[in-house]
Length: 225
Image: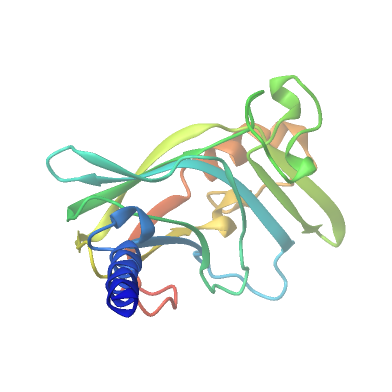
């Protein structure tokens, strides 16, 4: 009798554990979307170009997917520091569970920290005022002279997917958002010296306008599938 009760309890326990690990029955345990940021080489640069980039860090938050009919689904809310890989390999920075459906665009916020934000990278916060909090930090060289450019730009952006993306509950989809960093320091054919404060407005606007491509990228190579 005791053995029968033991076996019954064991059967119930196994089924409960199996149910908890099933992402279909318990969707909170699963992720059906991953978002990466990739360096879009954009402009054709040569070895003699005056701008050489060493590192780029971008602060993003409020990652959402929007359907063609206007409904949206959150991927991740909190601020995320993304270290951009300058060789073009996508950097995955957000993953989550979105409602199954057909999505036409990605929405996000280029963000400088607010008082309530917890940012693990102290470089983004130099003080309490808005002009001492940064959304983008670029390190490099201009004509061989080192520079650190810090942008205070904040902007909510929407980028259309190259082709609309159908997301299902049980298959993880990988999406890449690309940013044309090389365009940040150019105005037409004029090179903008990042050490010259008079170029700040042009550079910040270039940063805001440089997020132009988003696409399904299930093989995670930075090229649209």
